[in-house]
Structures are given as C-alpha cells and as structure tokens.
Amino acid sequence: MQDASVPATITIELPAALQPLAGNAMALPATGATVAEALADLGGSHPLLLSRILTRGGQLRPHVNLFINERDVRSADGLATVVRPGDTLLVVPSVAGG
Amino acid sequence: MSLEIRLEHIKRDIPLVSPTEALARCRTGAVLIDVREAEEIALGTPEAARALGRGYLEMRIGDEVPDTGQPVLLLCAATTRSLLAAADLRQLGYRNVAVVEGGFNRWKNEGLPYILPEAADADARQRYARQIILPELGPAGQALLGKARVVLVGAGGLGSPAALYLAAAGVGTLGLIDHDRVERSNLHRQVVHRDDRVGMDKTESARLTLEALNPTVRIRRHTLRLDAGNVEAVLADYDLVVDGSDNFATRYLVSDACQRLGLPNVYGAVQGFEGQVSVFPAGGQPCYRCLFAEPPPPELAPSCSEAGVLGVVPGIIGLLQALEVIKLITGIGEPLIGRLLLFDARRSSLRQVLLHADPECRYCAPGREFPGYADDPHFCHS
Image (tube, rainbow over all chains, first blue to last red; front, top):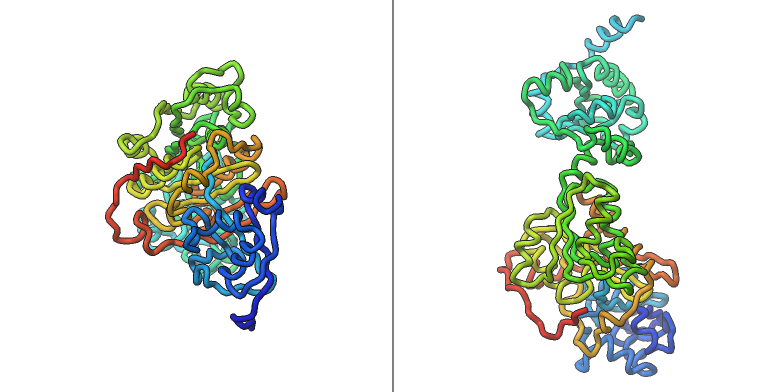
C-alpha cells in the first residue's frame, strides 16, 4: 500500500486545447502525493497551463474535469485525492463545437 | 415416429396456456418468445414478445434467457412449431416451458395487444432487411425505431452524420433545429448539405437529403434559434434529444430543458482533433451540468467559430451519438449513461471515463425545484 505522504510521479495528459501551453506536449510528468501537489509541480514549470486548470484561489475550474485512472476526482477527495506512482491524471475541459 | 405422434408425446410434458393466461404470465416475469419467421412477425407480434426464429432458437436462447429456471412461453402461428421448440428447450435444460395454445392467430382474435412492426410493407422489409435480421433488433426493434421521434439540435457537423444514419435506420420522425444557412465553409464536415445548396436554410437542405435517402421518414423542420422561450415547446414533441449544437448557451439550455421535460440527452461535442460523447438519462443523473457545472469564462473559451475542427471528427462523434440513439430506442446493449467517451483523432484513441453525479446539482439532484433557465451573457455564440 502506497503511503499517502510519499510523492509519486504521475503522467498528466492534456487536451489539445492546452497543449500549446505545455510546449505542445500531449502529456507531462509531475510529482506529488496528491492531485493538488502534482498540479503544483506542473505549475512550477508551466504556470500558464496551471492557470487554465485551477482558479487563482487554487480551486478546480468548473468547466474542467480531472480523472485519475478514469475516475472523476470530484467523486473522490477532489484535489486532495491521493495519487500513486504510474497514475494518469486526465484533464478534460468542456468543448462546445458541433 | 410421425409428426402427429411426436406432438402427442410432447403435449404430455409441455403445458398449454391460453393467450390471456400467457399475457398475465408475461406481466409477472415470464419470457414470451415468438418463434415464427420474420415475414410472419412483420405482420404483427405480441408487444412483449421477443423474436427468436426456430432456426436460431437453440443457439440464441442462452443469451435471451440465461436462467434455465425462468418461465418461458413459446408462441407460433398456431401451436405446432411452439411444441417442437418447447421440446428442444426442455432438452437444453429449460424446466419451466409452456406453449401458447392457438398461437398468434388466437392471440389476435382474442383482441390481445400486439404491435405491427414497421417492416410490414415490402419497402421496409427490403430497406431494413440487413438490420432486421440481427436478433438483437428484429422486427420489434425496427418497429420501435419507426415509432421514435428524435430531434437533432443543430444540422451541422454532428447533426449531419447523425441525421443521415438515423434516417437510414428508419427512425420514424426526425426533427431538425437550426437557424443557419448553408455556407461553403460548412461542407467539409456537414455532409448532409451540398455545394449547390449554399445559402439555403440548413433545415431545408437537410430535409432534401434525408428524404432522398429515406422517403418513409417524417422530417420536421424547426428553423429557429433555441432560447428559453421556445425550447420546451420545440423539444416536448420528441422522445429523445441529440445535442449537436455549436455553442455553450444552447448546450446548457438543451440540458436544462431535457431535465425539465424528462428527455434523454445524447451529447456530443468536438474541437480540433478531439470529441466527447455521453448520454444524460431522462430525468436522472448525471446531467451535462454535473460534468461541466459552468461554461468557461469568455477569456478561456475558444472562439466557437474559429476553434477549427477536422471534418472527420464530428463525423465520428455524430455517428457515436446516432448509435446511442438507436440503442436507447431499441434497448440494445448498454447506453453510455454515467460514462464519457473521449476520442482523440491524432492518437486514434477512444477512452472512457466515469462521470460523477453531483449530489448538489441544481438541475438534476433529486427533489430539486427547477431553478429556471440561465441567461448568461458570457456564453460564447457561434
């Protein structure tokens, strides 16, 4: 069992709309014990990218969903959800095109 | 052994029940199986019956009735084929098998309820032959498609492929909502339209194409922009909504109206090389607002008209929406409820995530009063 306090390296997968803010990478590695910590790690190198996921107050933007291994973090512990090595954090913003 | 003697033997083991008794047993959990040929079923079949022709009965009964202890009723035109089928099912281990005495002829004569599958006429028999032959669909499923009233919000990139395939599949009534006219820049993805219709109302252009494809489908045009004042009046005439709109304002409006009217909302959205599909259930959770509580602020929303999209992407997403529509109407398979499919054309990947029903959702949480339609000026319009 992974200790919740131990940082884990995970993969953050980005939608196409956010990839230009990540040097056009489809995915980036990040390290942290929780979703919030992994995002903070991401924000250290890509602050503009982080600002598209979290509000200035550090809350998840209401038009963005985060899924850890297919599960919505809102159905777990939100940004406090513990991550484990090898997890994939999928960022899914709303799109309206038709 | 002659057929007569064999039938006499079978009758010693297999109980015969009247059509009235069979109907009563159906209502308490018995499975009624119509073993007649497709051509016979096309002329009428009990509403609750599952079509399972004699030729495939042994091969398919396990999927239809996995529990060999389940009460099974067999029906043919009279009684003979049902008795033979019943003997086969007994041999397969089905313990509780009975035959409807007098078959469908008596069922009909006694005024018991039955449906006339859409495939009753020769045109439909030919047109839908390749899908009616699917045991999961059959004449009964085709009849359900024929009775269905589906409305497409947007006759654009998503609505075009969805409308084409739903019309082809025989959905009886298709409503088309769009206030726009065909532009040449639409044609790389909005394949229901044509170059010589540039400038025409999209609803009219789509009608011409769809009626040429399948003249038996009823097309209803709604050449208007949906707003809080008209959305309920338009959607209320339909059983199911396909959201293929191109802006957040309409998406939230459609979602909220579907909640209020108790209509399933088959959602699709695209941008660039990516697309999303889900089904928000009739009057249930989760809804579109559970997924995306609010639209993005304007500074973060890509311009709806400039975001760009590869034409194939709405083609794929619109067809996934059409597929979900057919599944919802016919009851085939598992609808995409509580799941979001994410398509990425560059990776050729289709992945699924599980949706969270927001217990505090203002629109779909149980026991909530309808809060009214939002009128958010920040919405992005195409």
